[in-house]
Image 1 (cartoon, rainbow, N blue to C red):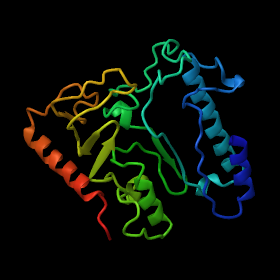
Image 2 (image 1 turned 135 degrees about the horizontal axis):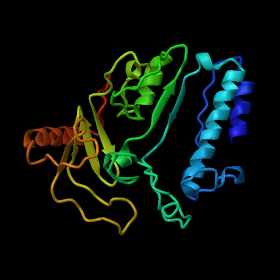
Image 3 (image 1 turned 90 degrees about the horizontal axis):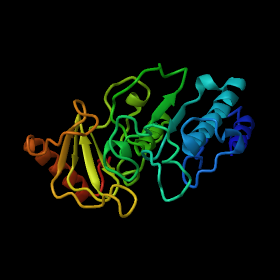
Image 4 (image 1 turned 120 degrees about the vertical axis):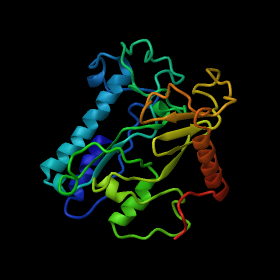
Length: 260
């Protein structure tokens, strides 16, 4: 599919194009090509990431070679946080060699903690975006409204009900993204500002593991405690109450983007 992606770019170099490049690489069953097997020090999962990195490099290289990179918006992101043992006996957990896939974040894929819901998001557009790190809160559904705005299109009122136009943040013109974000992974959580509320929590991931339901809400100040180690739900009951009401409002409405 990398070769086909490069061919697509070559064929459409003279006109605007859109390429959605969804790789299998890191998803189970993990089957990195032989040229990438054993090339990292943290097992087959990392080898698969190495193959993905190579694929991205081939696409970026094609844009450079065809002198298209300067005027092309490229977004690289993931659909969820990492997981090692996902039901396949491929040695991912045994061979990880101390590597922490989620870094400092708590949890994993299937978890409402940041390790399950916070994902890499890189946007590059040399002619328009100046490199920087942004703390703006955005969600992938926001790409619908943001790219519609970028291309001068208007979304129908009933389209993309949870998508907000965060184009200024995407382009680095603003440090402000969306006001709040509802997260889903075996339950719901909500983020607003530095605060994150998990009103109840379902399974931590694979069925049968840590799947006791949480009886009390969890509230975290992600600015001070990004690893979600100190539950402030009792101490800041006022914040928990406000976020609970906001989450219920969104659920009742069935959408978070106002109809315009």
